[in-house]
Length: 368
Ligand SMILES: Cc1cc2nc3c(=O)[nH]c(=O)nc-3n(C[C@H](O)[C@H](O)[C@H](O)COP(=O)(O)OP(=O)(O)OC[C@H]3O[C@@H](n4cnc5c(N)ncnc54)[C@H](O)[C@@H]3O)c2cc1C
Image (cartoon, rainbow, N blue to C red; front, side, top):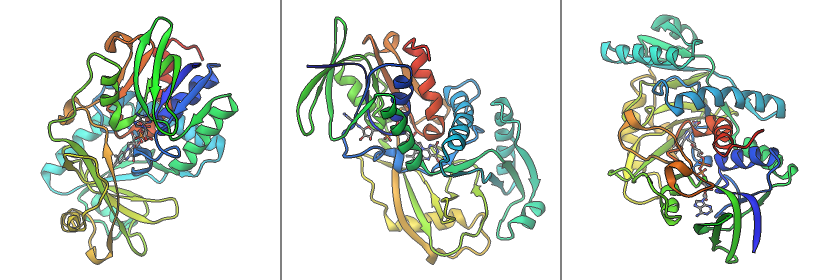
């Protein structure tokens, strides 16, 4: 039987960031990933936005780790030449109800140490973005975009340079506490057993079901409404705006917003569609609802330019937006010594990944 200091289960952006951190700290580290490569789960099904940390409940893990994570991510991208761009984001409001919602976001942003946000009038905004419909705009200059694949590739390289190993096509099926660690049983190409002093369950939307197979306590239930899918539509032709444009948030998501890829291609989404089982098919009929939302902030929008693109599923552990937070559950909560479960790592998980890794190392008392 093989034995190692750490097994990280799941090779998404968060699993890779944790594995990298622990390998750099000098621990022998293995990542076990079910798919044939890294980042094929939610880490390649998102908006690739570096969030500034405006919206999250002050004092929550999301607020802290997003704010810290964005700074870690910007400096990591700069030091490694990872493609990224600090384009900035505008949140737009029309009408008194939306403006008062936007004021609340501005005060939450300040409470979350995002003091860089500022206001613009609709007319000032339209000078720079003539296609925009907006009475008021809250500007977040520290929001940006990143090539998440490039970022993950770099995390993997750091892991391997520090002696870590990435093992694809290996599904962890169960685990149990033994006297000096945790014994994991895997399936996939070859069934085998591996013993680890520490295990990080970083399996995204599957983390609660895997934790149950370890006999963990306090495993969050799946939201009663099922899985919160987010669909995207891409825009053919030239992008109408030069920065990211967001409406005020909707329950469960940030609203159908416009993001840009690093090559300037525009896409809209994600919306919120509750589904009973995991599937990533984008229903072209959703174009009607998308068009209705986009028309609220884009003057000459033409729905013929929208094409169904991809979808992702948010790793939600509650359907109550006000209580939704990241959960980093260690032995005191889950009852399995040496095990960390990462639950609820939905957006802003990509932005927060390097900060989540710091937090995991702290919880395991690893001095880095
Ligand atoms: C629609 C959408 C938009 C988003 N937009 C943004 C954004 O703009 N900015 C941002 O910061 N965040 C965003 N996020 C959040 C971000 O994508 C996630 O928080 C992040 O990708 C989570 O990474 P992860 O490593 O935890 O999960 P994943 O990337 O899902 O990785 C989990 C991995 O575990 C593997 N796995 C599962 N079960 C097993 C098993 N039993 N054994 C072995 N391996 C297993 C899976 O194959 C997968 O590779 C968005 C999320 C969604 C869904």
